[in-house]
Amino acid sequence: MNEFLSATDQNHGNVTLLQEFNDAAGAFEYLKSLYDENIAKVKNRFAAFEKGDKSSPADTAYYPYVGLTVESSDINLNTRRAYGNLDAAGTFGTTLTQPDLFESYYKEQIELILKNHRRSVSVGLSDKPMPLPFVIESASADVTADDMRALQNIFFMPELANINDSIANGTFVPSGAEPRPLSLFTAARVDYSLLRLSHYTGTTPEHFQRFVLFTNYQRYVDEFIDYSKDQVLNGDEYQAFVEPGNVITTNGKLTGGPASGLAPSHLPQMPAYHLVHEKHMGITLVNIGVGPSNAKTITDHIAVLRPHCWLMVGHCGGLRRTQRLGDFVLAHAYVREDHVLDGDIHPSVPLPAIAEIQVALTEAVARSADISTEAAALKEHFRTGTVYTTDDRDWELRHKELAVRFNQTRAIAVDMESATIAANGFRFRVPYGTLLCVSDKPIHGEIKLPGMANKFYEGRTAKHLHIGIDTLRHLRKSGVESLHSRKLRSFDEPAFR
Image (cartoon, rainbow, N blue to C red; front, side):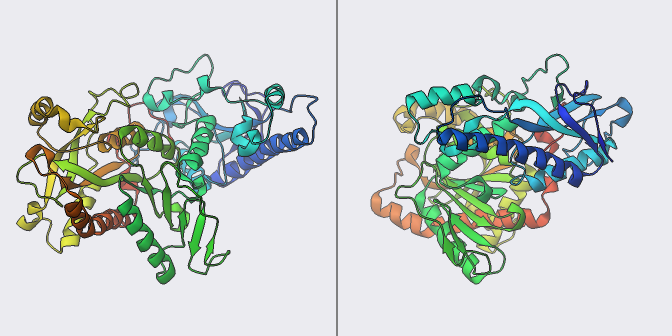
């Protein structure tokens, strides 16, 4: 069905050029055509501005919209998936952006709501304008102060008061006849993060994969680069490897030859590296550096790409005498003393372990040691328990105070990023996990010296990283549907994953 409706539909608010569809492909093609048409408006008017035409406002460009209205009889509470389903009657909708980047994701989400509710979806043009900086990244590159004032008179600029995480945080309240959310993120919120990803990681969003590793040490990056290039040049599982500057190494089967792109003169704040698999099902590694602020920042933005999971693989301080340097720590729980997310998700909110990821990590550790997951040998170098994440890099100077906290929480390791990554995974419904490696035990007087550190890193970095890679590969091959647990979703969730 492809029926043209009236210019403004009462149920969907101020939406124009509205059409109904019973097939995801048709709905996607129409929203893409609307997006492309409105992007062209901005680009053409900006090209005229660059040539000196500052005479009149631009023809406002708007984001496309998709929505549907369901009745009580359309509610299907027996679906096995944790997403793709609405649990209440009403009108739901969202603005969308970057259809070329999100094609498979949008089609899947639209197909699921069509299948589960047997109601057509409405696609049209919203009343939410496209801000100039979200369309043309170089828009402010060579403009004067007078030009900037002219830009603001001609083009729509971002309204940060309306770009937020209220839907994900559970604080959004629709006003009047406004549809209820169909997605965790509006189009403007997605575009905001896509720009930030390019800035912080040095790679464009289309290279990001849906399985993500975070680390806090450069040695993991070096090992990942070596592994990825070997996989691309000598294997047939992955298509390409992308480094900061969008430097692409291929196996020669892709257009562009063995390598393309230009490496940056300086690495970005949190460089990203992408081992590319078809349909974005490969692995992205991001070196987030040290501290919860970076951990929050990068996960705030990667979340809009809707990854299937993210894992932290970094170093930690061991808190038990029985631990040895090089032992692994699998986080089952977290103490959130990082504080950077306290305003978005209260520290009292528990972060449940995701069973599928916990099992996959345990099995990967066992495979790396060639032992059974039930073997006593595994327990000798592998501990599960609570990780204490702090925002104080010099926490050792508060030894007396924190020793009491460590005892009370039964923590087995301390770091500065893991709880932040897990909390944002919970907040944004992205399955999460943590496997750390004990690099020192300062509370017990075992502090790394330079020579000891080099020996430790040489022996453990590669093994630790490959456990993370092995885990993600097995999760992908096992199927991603089971990863998206209901424990990450509330009682009135948007339908889109």
